[in-house]
Picture 1 (tube, one colour):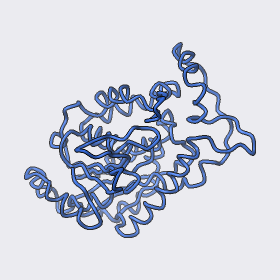
Picture 2 (cartoon, helix red, strand yellow):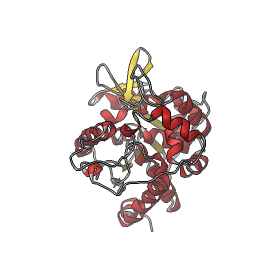
Picture 3 (cartoon, helix red, strand yellow):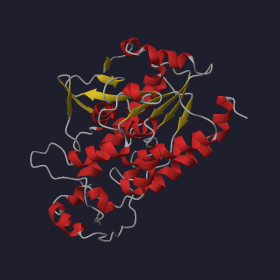
Length: 329
């Protein structure tokens, strides 16, 4: 794990590369490709579609850096488990998502961490998988809750790094690591272009999931109807009835204030959009991929098929620029 500041992070993270990592980079073609997978909660399933579409045109990154949901997809991809991950997320229903929610009277988070850990070991990688075991160079980003400093993981247990990167305040409890409390990396570096550069990428493709969502989350849509698709739903509905409106859409009057997660996600959207613009102004990617995902809410993980398809569509729209920059036929 590395602590990065403005400037010092570049040198410190490079010093933690193993000899094997450096040798692998040197054996690549003349151009080392980095892929920065940004934060964006449920919209992050579009990373799967983007990776698929890039692979189809012959682009396979040498370095993958993920923030929040980007770290989940990145770890699964480099561990060779993206096929099973895609199959599972594509079958998700809203009921399945509800099962991952847990009311915590101590207000330390609303996600069942035990169930999520089982998901990680099944669809990302084994619990003892180390960074050095992955097929390519990988890094994740998290935030030190006390100091606000940006923390980069480039070695050690992969799942520890993923947990630290996804711990969105309000949904997940902070993760303690080496005496520090860590939270979601999207608070400081939502699209980790700088990490890709630090690890040696010559060309960086970046995926920004938050480019078109500020304000659009509150656009009124037709009410959705969901069916109780399993017997357990009735039991779950009773246990979450008093707070479920905070997580999913409900019918609102014209003067109804945003619910809890509307307010949280809207605030995070604004923050991450501004941080992303600022970071990329100083260190822009060579190719910026921005899927159109404003219609997908913070916890609508059951809409994976839409997100994945939009990821593929995004690459298709950007294909002329990608081919030009990458010098592809």
